[in-house]
Length: 115
Image (cartoon, rainbow, N blue to C red; front, side, top):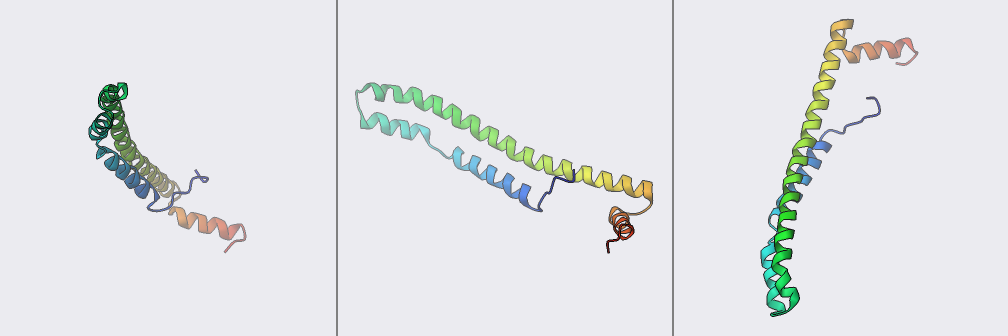
């Protein structure tokens, strides 16, 4: 996992932004927009179809809001799982070598001619 670099706060920020997008979409008033379309073109074919489109669009928005909520939670779950895995590896490393991960790497760096 050396190629994975998680910047502190990025997952939380991303999760929050996804949740905010879902909240914003949930306030979208599809029925009013469809009503405005129908009122603007009374008696037209488009006005009659506006209600059908409104229902279809409303269902799509509801599904998207629900999916964004799940995705936001999944982002945080991924972060928590990554942290738990990292802690487990560090704990196992310490149990096997008798030293903490950072101490072992510092010792290795000294042996390889580093600091």
